[in-house]
Structures are given as structure tokens and as C-alpha cells.
Amino acid sequence: DREVPVQPRCRERSSGLNAMAARAAAAIDDIDAAFDGALGLEEHFLAAGYAEGTVRGAASGQDDGRRLGCDRGRELGRELGRFRGRIDMLNALVAAGPAPRHLPERISRLLNEAAATIPTEPPAPQDEAAFEAIAELRAKMRMLDAWLGGSRLPAVEPDLSF
Image 1 (cartoon, rainbow, N blue to C red):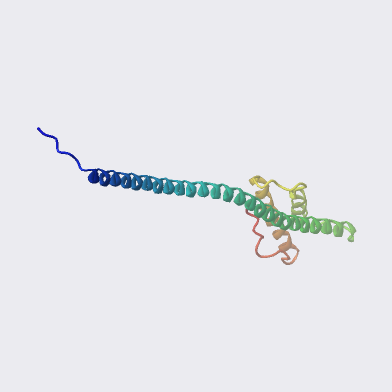
Image 2: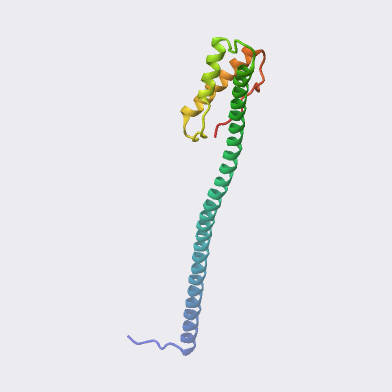
């Protein structure tokens, strides 16, 4: 059982290989850490971009909705204003006309119903009953136009859906 002496040169070579292996392992760990950091950055920027896109999208949607609401509200206001003006004009013509100063009963009743149906306040977008009343008002105005000798209303109603 004799020990074999290790030559000093082998010992140096062995320790040099161990040092190189240790440096290679450290380099691999550094590369892994760098890739992990890069993957973390990607997730961070993705989350930040999503959050910013959500905020900007909401703001853009509100602007578009406000613009659409103003346009549709303007169309509805003009339409209701035309109806109010025509009803007032017809009532004034009847009052200023020669005796007997009255319209046939059906036309007079329809005129009064139409005048009572015109809303004085703008309807809320969610108020379906108000929009159904406006649709009935359009029908009454078309009947009134037909009885008075012709249609002056547009054939296609404006699209006021939101």
C-alpha cells in the first residue's frame, strides 16, 4: 500500500482545469441571469404598455362617444324643433284663418296629440320609452302631412341609436 506520489505538474494542470470550469459555470450563470432579466423586462414593458393602452383607449372612447352623442343629439333636437315649429305654424294658421276656424276633428286631435308628445327636455340615452314616444310622434307627423296634402318629412328617419 504504497502511495503514488503526484507530480507537481499534474496538480497545476488539475487546478487550472478546475478554475476554468468554475469560470465557465459562473459565465453560464451570468448569461442565465441576463436572460432572466431580459424576460422580466419584456413582461414589465408589456404590462406597462397594456396599462397605458387601456387608459388612452378609455379616453379616446369617451371623446368618440361625446362627439357621437353631440351629433345625434343635434339631429334629434333639429327634428323635434321642426315638429314643434310645424305644429305651432298650423295652429297659428287655423287661428288666423277665416271662420269657422277649425280643422276636421281627426286632424285637430292628431295635431293636439303631436303637440303634447314633443318632449320639452332632451331624453336620456337609456330612456327607451322616450324614444318610443318620439317614434310615435314621427308617425303622427307623417299622418298629418298625408292628410294635409303631401309629405315634407324625410323618407328615412335619422339613425339616433347609440
